[in-house]
Amino acid sequence: MKELVEQIKAEYAAFAENADAQVEKGNKAAGARARKAALNIMKLMKDFRKASVEAAK
Figure 1: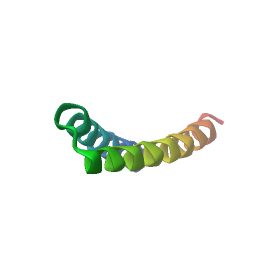
Figure 2 (figure 1 turned 45 degrees about the vertical axis):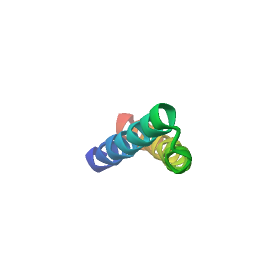
Figure 3 (figure 1 turned 60 degrees about the horizontal axis):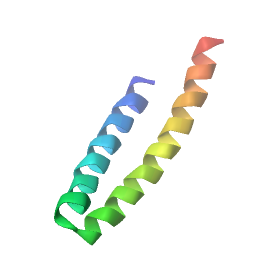
Figure 4 (figure 1 turned 180 degrees about the horizontal axis):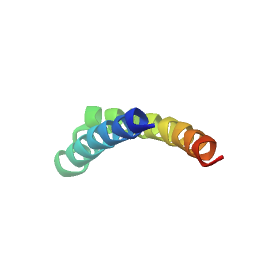
């Protein structure tokens, strides 16, 4: 579960960096990377939820 949390943190850092580049500099490629990171975060969060529920049992 700790590894999963680290993956979420890394993906969020990539998302934040690319989203800032899109908003501040108008970098369209960074926007695509931010959207991809957002999808990966969503998947990882679902995996975290499953792992968390299993750990609580």
